[in-house]
Amino acid sequence: MNIPMKNRLRSSRAAGFTLLETLLALAMVITLLFVMTRVFDDLVDARRRIERSASVVEGATSALELLARSADTVVASSDSGGAGVVGDATSLQITRSGIATSRLSRAGSDVSPLFDKHAIEMAFRNGGFEVKDGDGGDWSTLVPEVFAVRFRYHDGASWTEAWNSGDSGLPVAIECAIWTAPWPDDLRPAWIPDAEDDEAFAVDSEDFFSDDAIASEFGSDADDPFFASATFLTADDPMPRPDHVRVVAILDAIPGSGSRDEDGDRR
Image (cartoon, rainbow, N blue to C red; front, top):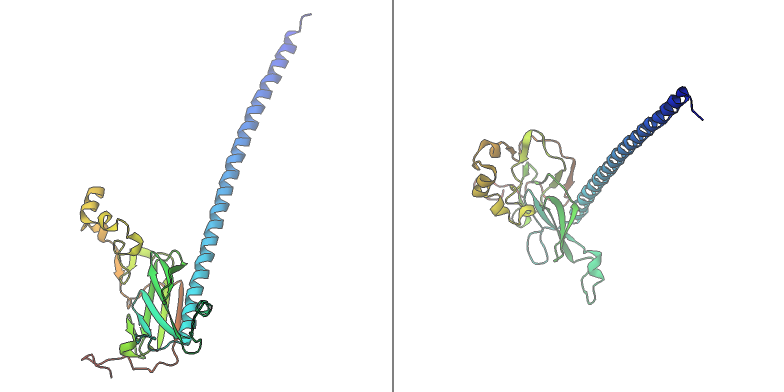
């Protein structure tokens, strides 16, 4: 039985359109999967950024609260006779009366929570804000990624970048400022060590950042303007507002006890 030519052409067109529709459907599925993958990746990245931001805020809040609690019971000298408050722009050791709860639970411990003194250390280390038990504990990171940290000490008249209560008595106030985001226009804090001096770059840093290494790696001298383009700000210069800052007053301090005259003698 012969099939009319018109019917054969209609069947061929139907088969052709079915193949085209299949290819279009396949392309749409692939496109949809690609879009869904991108959306999923964006959601994962957004969640990661939110978690990091929350971690930074929580860590910075904990660090500033620790400073405030320590300042409430700070003492001018430690059990060993050392200074109770010793610090500079990037680190602070503060001794307070009372002890950590963990020390009370140690077997054979004869310390008194009323009279014993306990020291803690805070510092900008390894690119983060870290704290340490002054009785020999390990460093613990509270804020993992920090651009800059600045401690300042008020003597009753002005702020200073360093303090030693053994020489100057207790400061009137202690300020802790934390910047988590880089400063604009390539501004950098002058009191923060350069990358080659920072403990975060301790492994092979001296070799990697040496003049010879820079010249061999980049084909340029270390004194090239490219490597000296940053503007460094001192602690007294106007600078971007800190992301987290707290000023803690010390009630037992005597205003002016730490100020000195031109000869370096205490007033």
